[in-house]
Structure formats: structure tokens, C-alpha cells
Image (cartoon, rainbow, N blue to C red; front, side, top):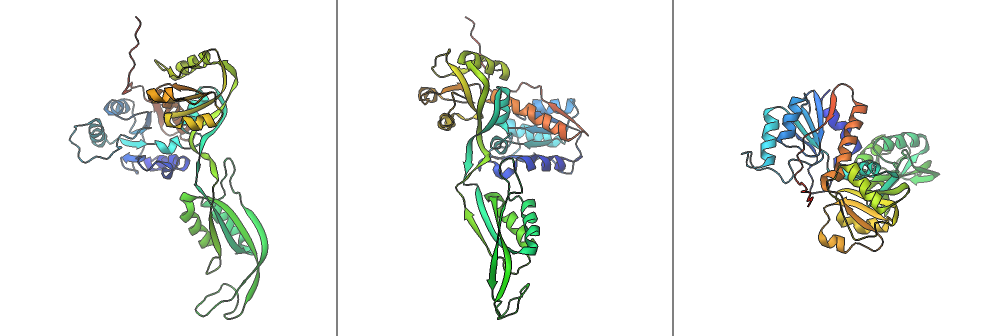
Length: 369
């Protein structure tokens, strides 16, 4: 199986269009036509991880963080990124990164963190707005099913856990072909009256052109009567963070201990709080999510688990919510494990392994006295 096949599968689940503008997710090094001998999943890609990949028979490294982030202008070995990329090229190792595109989808990084902490049926904490449009198109009745199918295949009509969603109403359409027209039906200069259906679809903004091309190709008319309408709706399966309830309330002290244990955190920081208070509704955001604490509070959460919180972030925590910082890598590691398992479940022709290299850039010194 080729690297390109794996890349296609990954990007069907977390398309690159969902990444932030500053990001650099996707295939960073390697030939998409190269056959896969094995895949090693890691939080970061560096020389140690690549050496581990070679030792374990893997020629593909999937990392959450992109090793090429701000761009490379030279390969002189003067930085970790330069040395890692050069090493990968020399040893024919493909490097792929799935970063903010996997941060911003239901089932992605934050959802892995939520499940690890025992949150039941998590939902997106901060749904992405401005990501949807409505397509209205008028179609001859006999062609409505074909046009709808084309729209569905192009990505229209997807709402949360449902797809192939649309609305249909029937009416009468009129038009008069003018000189130069090549009408599908009717006579030039004569008003045509025909039974038509009005089809309505919700379309992600990023798929507008793709859906338009598919619908126009399936539509029989020379000129397609249609409209695009911007929507204020937020999509329930796109956005940052996750929120949900524990199976039953627990003391804050017990929850903090659970978080440290489940995530392998050497130390956990938390805002001033009564450790005996009971908590049940938990919001999380894997990685650097301290800036989203307002959204966490608005979700009704008792606790917000994330990383990279600053001093004043703890000081200015909204009333009623406890901020817990478990560490950046610690908050994202559950995703690496889930990522590997998802790939194993889909592909059986190569091994999918999890890196055992401890290349954490930030360490904690425990003062025992």
C-alpha cells in the first residue's frame, strides 16, 4: 500500500482545509507513491523518532506537530527541523503531520482527551461559525434525484452525524429562451412553463466550488437557476475543545488525581479552588487552549482541562470554573494512541506502532524536599 493511499484516508477524516492559516499539516517529506513498510505515530518528529522508526521497520512517521512549521530556507543541520528533514530524506522516511485540522474536528485531539478523562458523549465545546452556506437550486422534476445525488457525493447535506440531508418543494418554473440560447427544452422566443423542484442543501463554505461543479454537471439546463445564502449556523462537528459530563460527580481532588494518572503528568497546575467541591461537567481542549476558557465557562463546565496557561490566566479564571493545566504533550498523547488504533482498524497490510521515544521538550523537576 502506498503513502498516498494512507494520506487520502487521513485527509478524508480531517481535511487540510480545516487547519489554521499559520499551520503546515499534510505530507511534509516523502513520495506519495512509496510503498509503506510500517507506520510510527508520535507527538513530535525528530531524529530520535526517525531512528526508532528505522529500528522498528517503519518508513512512515505520523506526528501531530509538524516538524516543518515556519518554513525552511536551508538544510545545513543548524536546527532540529533541518536535521530531521535531512535525515528523513537520506533514509527514505515519509513525514506526515496532522495538527490543527485534527484539533478542530469532532473525534479529534480534544475528544481523545475527553474520553481518557471519563467524559461521556462529548460534544464540540466551541463550534465553528461562518462555515456553512445554503444552496438553493431549481431542477426539472425528472432530474431532481440525479442532481441531489451529485450534491451529496460532493459533500453537501452533511449535518453532524447525518448526511444526505436536503429539502425539496415542487412548483412551476417559467423561462423564455432568447437568441443564442441552446435550451434543454422549449422554443426560442416562446415562454416555457415546466414542473420543477426546488432543492435546498447545507454546504460547507470550503466545499462550495466542489459542490457547484458537481451540481452544474448533473443539471440538464444551460443556465442553472440557483442562489447561495450565507448562514450564521455553527457546525456541530467542527470547532475546538470538547465538553460533556462524567458518569457521576466526583470531588475536585479526585478528578485532578485522575487527570494526572490517566495522562501520565508529572505535575498538574490548577487555579485556586476548594478541592472538596463536587464536579461533573468537564470541558477540555488538547494543546494550547488556555485562551478558550471563556468558551469553557459558557459551556457550563465546572472544570476546564487544557495546557500552556499563564499566571494571569489562572488569576483571571471566570467565576465558577476551575482551570487545570496538565501539560501540552500530556493533553495530546491520548490522540496519538487513538490515531494509531484507528489506522490499525482500517489497514492490515502494515504495522502501526506508537513511538516509545521520550522526546518531550518540556520536563518537570519534582522537588521532594
